[in-house]
Image: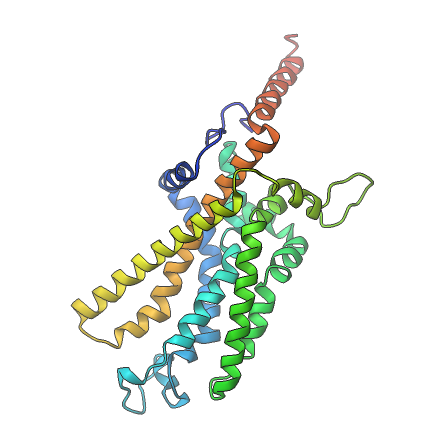
Amino acid sequence: MKFDNPRIAIRRRKTYELMDLSLHVIRTYPIRLALAMLVVIIPMLFLNDQLISHLLLIDSEFTSFVHLDTPEYELSYDAIIKTPFVTTLICLVIIQAPIVSMLSVVLLGQIVFGVESSLRKLISETFSRFGVLFWSVGCLRGIIPGLLVIQGIQTRNYQSYDDHIGLLVLITLYVVILRMVRPFILEIILLEKTPLFAKSKGQITLSKRSKGVHRSRTGVGGRVMSGMIMSMIITTSLVGGMIFFATTFVNQNQTTLWVLRWGLPISMWMAAGFLSIVRFLNYLDVRIEMEGWEAELLIRAEAEKIKERIQLGNV
């Protein structure tokens, strides 16, 4: 590891500088980041579509249209129910957003110190922390409860799915508030490899480490909110562009269905990927503020140099 010459300069930055640096990181490592995110995004995209695509239409008679078959009945654009589908999709992607950054967090940690790694190693290193991730991210941060609520949505019972969507919105609000207060849980789990329970006396557990990292005075919640606003702008811009293209050039109102079904989730996952990079850089900034991380890296770099000299017999 190159402790004295990291790929991303270790220094304090303001919120707008973190946003700008995130774009530079994407420009510098587009293929590696895209692969690390697409491995997760593509399965989640099709899983969510399988779970909620039926909410696009008002009646089960038209589900053949959703599943790419020839519709048996004439379908008018006004008959389409979009609100339940859009609400459910937005909530679902917000809840699942941490999943997209699991591999990218490990990748970014390696990029900082110039470590080359294959996609297989990234997956292996991430799965080595599966138990902690399942409990801390999957259960406590709403992913598993959200999927269970989605399973309960029924297409023909309007009261049933309205109640479930309301519950899903409440879970989403809980998740958003928790992320504003404790945004760096993935970095602590995957990079610091902090255990869920102490295996020896004096070992720092995940909960204690999380409390320590999130005591930052830099206004972590405000920065997270800024990132969320930027993600909303990115998503709105992409979806708006798709709808404009579909209605202007294709000239088919029903094309909006396909934009909602595929364009909206793809745009949200792209925004979530950008937000994960901003969060990682924010994590570095918090470590620098609270622990003097840049000084620690210089000390570790000098220790590595001394160790090499001793091995070569030059001391």
